[in-house]
Length: 433
Ligand code: AMP
Ligand code: GLY
Image (cartoon, rainbow, N blue to C red; front, top):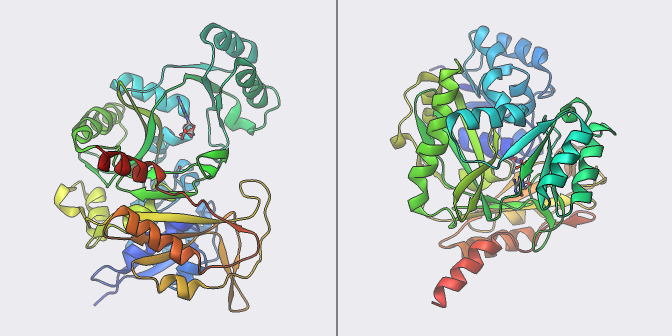
């Protein structure tokens, strides 16, 4: 029988988790990863093609004909990889370029949300610094300044004073710190509440929510220090109570799907909503057109059964709730990063203890910024590993994840000691009542 071939595009922890989950399918697919990391190399074949090299990826795919391509990062999606693969007769999981604009342009995303009636922070758009500052003066702080385009997670400033907001406006519109991505800025109402991530599968007609999760964006314990790509995650996020799910499914994702369709955009793939759970209900902070990182590591650890049928159903327009099932056990992913991250950091340091970490019950160590060098595994990025565990309860999962993290060593490694603290605190508070 023809052995199914899957191409995973990207090189982070999210992609290792996707490759890991896809590989477990009952049909035992052959996995290719472009460019992958040392973790994906152990599951299949890494290809020396960058995720942004659309032409190179297309050449390989035309020649090797993968049965399915799964796109991890936003850059190739925003550059139109799904459209190009489809035009070449290749099956690809990920939205078309027009749909990926929900992440590629915050202004476009706001416009679609407004037309769809989806709850989000009030915002105004500016290309002129003086006009933006006048708006800040009128509205006061706290207030949020966002670069319109893709700014590698660095384009958002939550300003606690008008002066901070003005500095952020100057950074984007005058100093052009984000290049073209910052030619337009959004100045947006500050929303108060707890954040959660909801990933959903969309097939152009139907929405199926994946298990909820919560990311930890700040580098330091207690949510201190600069923002990062994400220092850890856990699933489910108990702050997303069952009574919120119908609202999130229908009033957020359902309305977006409907409005996209009205605009002639057939969204097939994953849509990620970053939500603020405010006193007035869930409001959208941002949409991403792809799986979250590190949320995916925590969420996929809980996915029960095969994943390929659900992804294929997204392409075929046959998505149903029955295709997505969850293990009841909660999961936790602790990101181990290189010292200095999210600022400058070293690469090429040897990593030890991976085998012992993987041997801790319930633990899978997902690689992110790792590479193979003379048969040993070395650091190759800011976020290096995602130590992921499931357990009978969240406390047990956290214990396992940190026991495994304790086995791992590399020069100047750093990680947060408090992943899942909000959920653990909530639990404690409940036990007391
Ligand atoms: P974003 O990339 O738009 O999700 O923004 C990055 C982070 O900035 C979010 O995860 C929030 O912690 C924070 N943030 C963004 N928008 C707002 C807002 N309107 N109010 C409060 N915090 C925000
Ligand atoms: N964890 C945040 C993101 O993937 O954008």
